[in-house]
Image 1 (cartoon, chains in turn orange, brown):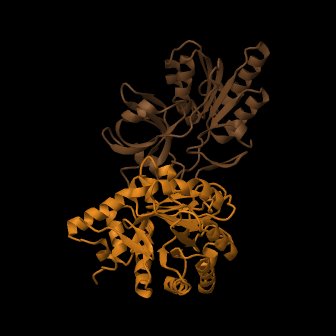
Image 2 (cartoon, rainbow over the protein chains, first blue to last red; image 1 turned 60 degrees about the vertical axis):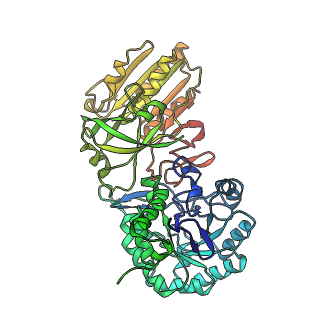
Image 3 (tube, chains in turn purple, blue; image 1 turned 180 degrees about the vertical axis):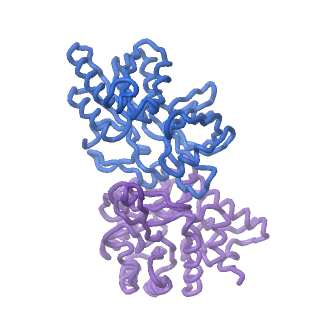
Length: 302
Length: 265
């Protein structure tokens, strides 16, 4: 019997696997494929105070071993999440991480206030979405701004606060430290890498917004490197993600220093991916004689 | 309920320029799929294609457990599919989406199919005929070689069916667009009092807009099947959204078939 429980900065998870925000909605669409209560947690799509329309179409393009997206945080607003998705998730017995988005520092705070008396177990503060003109990555590239957002969110809640970081910076550890100093209980990384794709024949961009976020197996080496850097530079638990499609990928992130992992783009390739990764990590542990999955964290031998 | 089924290629043949027909053994999908629904197919032989591809189901037979998919080579994923031989296995999420919903008492329908848009209308045509409706089908394509669904419609051989066709270059049927014939048919029906009570269109979006405009002009209920780039195919990722009069909706699960009253066309 392998101990699969992990503690992500105060969020207790029955296994180290959650879903990457924006790839799983709030789980209802995946109910035919995954019993969401069996995951370590469900991380919901980014939610703002009154909802956003998102970007123009086309919003996605496939790239080699990856994809670009520029959805733009389309969401119906926090009240809808409270009325519909959160009660359903609670009924399924799921641990819930709500991805919190805002155009301004005040909006982040208001969203958290709105969620305080709900079954949301933790917040993932989104200072890393590359597809919006305000908030998201525009705030996440500057350590001073990150500290302000995180500090404001920190003073709004006692629930575990996870801060999701963008890889589109020169030194991610600088941003990571700013987030931790401002009160983050855990770090989540990486969000997508800013990229673009062009159709040579039409000479047009493949995305309406021209640029978008790259995800999928193509980004995994970058994500692993950044998890490892943040693991060495900070002392808080890390939720690692970026191209995780199977249990080996997940174990690699844990060895690089992640306490938990998120399955993202792989949910699109295979709707069973999240739960298969969770079961696969347990199998890996059994086969390797690992009694406690926590032994893997930062276990890189070098 | 959606499921992810392992499907096995039974046949994969070229029908025309860049046009292929794939027959797959997929027992559960063959049993459950409704006209206008699609399957979300993994490019199982090349994992660098991380996204599945949505394909309307052309035909399904619960008895033989087979489904047919007509596909056009438009990129690397569909090109990869052309190499699949008998026995190749892949995964399909099925049966996805809101299919055609003709009025339950439809007596006379007009189906307008442009290019590969002929395929998603085929099961609808068959179903309407079985219910005793008269069905006029107008199919258009660039050239005669591209009119790959035509024979199959003729082969339905059911009472009440009439099939007309056009090509852009006049190499088969009338020269022009299928919407020209649709316009003639609607005008004639209005003059003779044998009105259509349902129009369904599938094909390039400009073609569907024309068909929808005609249906609106004659006051006939009309549905169209929209195509968008999709990632998850099950309603979660919001990649495939369509602008509707009620805001953005998802082509994958709120569509792909939409009543034109929902669309700001």
